[in-house]
Amino acid sequence: MAKWFVDRFSDDLEKLIALRSSITSSEELDKIDNTIIIIESLMSEYSYDFLLKDESTSFLLELEEDILAEFQDYLPLIDTIGGMDTIETSRGYKPIPKLSNEDIFELTYDFFKENTDRELFKVFRGMFKKRKDLLHMDRLGVEYIEPYSTFFPYYRKVHLFLKRVGGFEDLTDLAHEYGHGIQFLTNYHPNFFGENSIFSEIVSMFFELLDVDYLSRIGVFKSCAEEYQKWFLNSMITNSQFVLLDSKVVEYWRNLVRRGIKKS
Image (cartoon, rainbow, N blue to C red):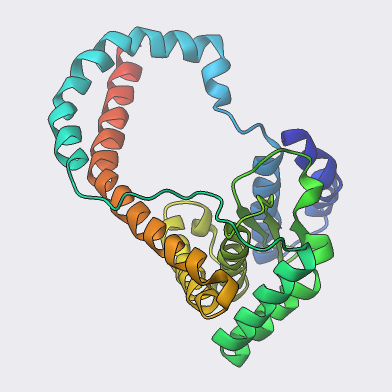
């Protein structure tokens, strides 16, 4: 997967690095540096490379006994949130009529045209017109990739990555990712890729749900939309169950790592 990103964006990266020396504006330099960081992250492997380093691996092994002992304190918390009610449904690949890429694009275009104001639709349409260059679907060369979008601040370009699965999700995922694009182009901040990423997700989920509602009024998608709404609600409940657990465990790991570093 990383090879595809290297092949696609290495030229952009080289041009930006060469351009840095000729830029005097601090604002422009910030945009270039942020874009370089984003491209480099795309080109890196989707794995925790630090775990492959001997010193890091040995460091984690040294902490193993502490981890196993101290994690026991969190088992009651896991049991508690695990007992919360959820709706029994899963995100399967819903049976829908076979749609071409152009069908997907047309339905998505119509959704944004009917459900956004003039300003937001203008932003969407600007991205949509450049989809041949900025929307990466069948060209990804992988069996599957989680839908993803990213923004190159210096170029003001939104790249969308979406591998079609042939189900209802092809429509909702595309609306979701274009929602990210609208945010990047109208209200970009570097923290969208960091501590504030959750707010970016909330806005895009709003577009996703609006799209589900829009599609529910089209006969062939009605039952799929209803099932999708159940899955979405279930996933929100499930994710909420892990919010407390996640915050506790993350803080635990931070403290553990700090203690481990001090020990070394």
